[in-house]
Length: 171
Image (tube, rainbow, N blue to C red; front, side):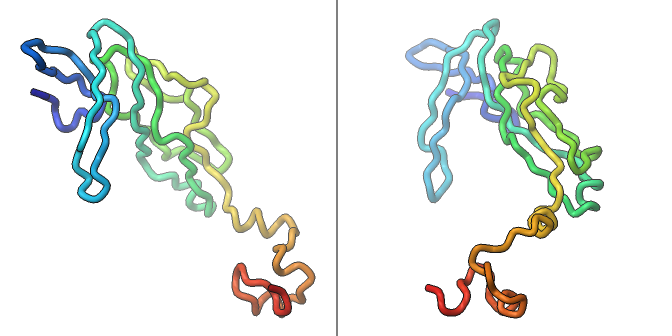
């Protein structure tokens, strides 16, 4: 029998009863049916309450990066899960990152995250989690580089060609 709160996520401590014994475990890998999405197989890891284990927790962005959006930039999330080490009962369901103060050119790194007591990130503190990037269209236009398919074309020819099409006479 498996007992777990629905909101605990995949790192929840589970009580598994098998062969008349009860084991403390965490789900390590879930396989889902490709169409229905139902769980078809689960791998469990037996753990002890006092041992430190590794786990992956989801990274959730909260807030609105107003300064980035006003500058037509993008919020680039580099990490979607964060590998952590902690005792099984201390593993959080997710880590939330407030991006409200994010600006273009700024970076939130692993070392900037506020993790609960007893939880450490299993990545370098300098690893980027979220960055505010400038608009890509303006950066590409400002380089002066020509699109290879339109190199040598007159401005009128370039404007009349659909994106990604080769100029007339090529192909």
